Image 1 (cartoon, rainbow, N blue to C red):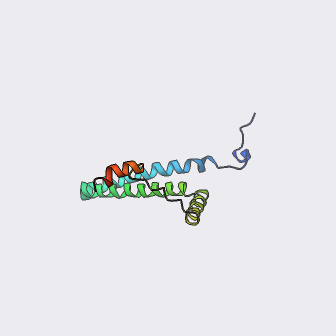
Image 2 (cartoon, one colour):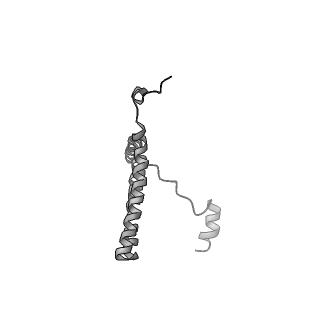
Image 3 (cartoon, helix red, strand yellow):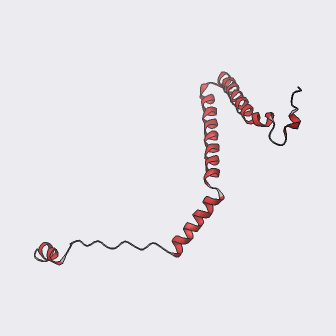
Length: 115
């Protein structure tokens, strides 16, 4: 029995393609750590903390952008537009005003008599 040739596996991502994002993330983290250590050694801890804060902000911005892309799908966009148009063309009815007094007798007793 011979080993299967990866080229015969058919279409689909290769193992290298599947592992690429993980390897890039590990290398970026390691590179960031090395840079922070070098900067801290050369310029002091305050600059290193500043670089770390910028990296955290960059990560946060990336997470927000990714979240917005997930939330703002074409279907969600169409639903939002349809809802806005419906609200504009058919505004909701204003609520019925509430009476201060439940009936005429209570109105006379609590307001007219005192005034």
